Amino acid sequence: MAKSKRDRQGKQPSAFLRGLWERLRRLSGRLPLPEDGGEPIDFSSPSIPYYRNLAERFSLARIILYLALFVFVVTALLSNRHLLTYSNLYYLVKDINAAALTAQDLANTLEYPASQSAPAFAAYRGGLVVAGSDEVTVLNGAGKKTLSEGVSYGSPAVAVSDKYFLTYGLGECSFALYNAFSRVYGEDTEYPVYGAAVADDGSFAVLTRSQTYTSEVIFYDRDMNRLAAYHLGGYATSLTLNPSGETAAILSVDSEDGLWITKISLIRVSDRMTENSVQTVTLTDTFGGVCGFVAEDRVAAVLSDRLLILRPDGEILSETVFDGLTPTLCAIGAGRVAVLSEKSTDLSEKDLKVFDKSGKIVYNRSIAWDGSPTAMAFGGYTLYVRTATAVYRLSPDGRELLYAPINRDAVCILPDEDGNVLVCGTAYATRLRQADFTASASN
Image 1: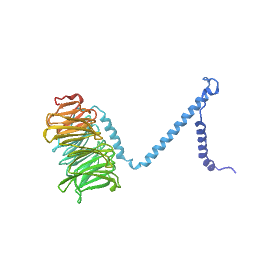
Image 2: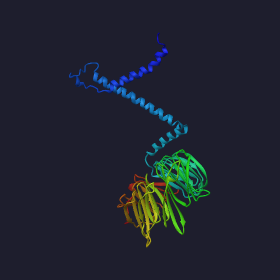
Image 3: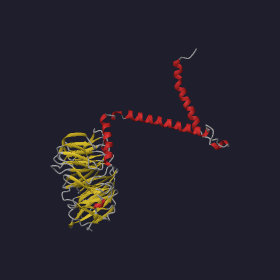
Image 4: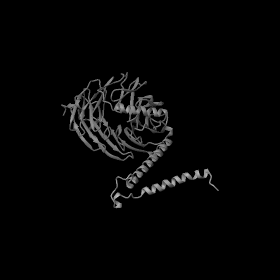
């Protein structure tokens, strides 16, 4: 009986696979070299077996790679189809455009709307974020405005990461999360917001309080969903997230029997937080200051009388006590911590200590500043110190001290790793470059 057309068609796929397998097996073996035959190659021949077989192998390899690429793309699209939305594609195109603008020449002056109250500033993607009382503004490095949105803040504040930033009013009941060109999330809170931190993937944490607890930290994932809340009986003075958003550090203070009690809470952030997710270091008779990540897995905590370097599991790697010194300013950067202190016996003398991420001292200097230092910040390993009339620059080893004069209305300095510093005033920022710094007369 003759086979039906359907039967013949049903066998075609298996015949194709068998043929493909035979071809793979034949081409996967050792390819004989031309000299194996012992006879010279006849290049006048229209077909040379060695090079024909070699071309077949490259052709087959190309087909296999195309198939692998096709399978990868289809799998990626199917597993992330919930992210394939018009708004996400729009953001992708805008983000590529913003990245291209960042590569333009850096402007010497960046202008922004004047704020009725003291604005908050943050360096962002090669440019600047300005959170004013009436408007949030983003400028790229070339000075072009990429975002402008009306707000109403009595005391503006901003927290920033590499890709996102969050604005809020200090002691006010709202906050908003942005990327370089749009607001992506906003929320009105039941209780006032006192702090915030943002990770590179868009996850963030907000410090507020609750009806029962003095301090409450609410954690959100990168899709702006609430993960969990952590409650503290004391007053939280500092909140930070590591760049990946996997670990949070909270510094809080309370009083007990007339003594200050400082707690450093280290939290593994997830949607299933338990008691085992939190490690707490408690110190007596010291007052909490600020904390920050000097590396993905290391937290620096500057207290009223000491510096601690800790791991996320609560292990104390280093503890430095400030004997006879009172910290007045500190800066925590990627891999460095700087502490400026006054001596209890001579308040006019300032002691500057810079530590590495392990808590080892890098350098220690006593400097006669032109005016009292009011701010410090790191640009890479280079430390910048601002006074009322100048910005000082200390080399990574602390041996070279340079300075550049500034206007008295400057309220913030924002250095980058390339040696540039944005000096922000009430209505515009000026950029100091390496060539603007000269030798300082200070010791």
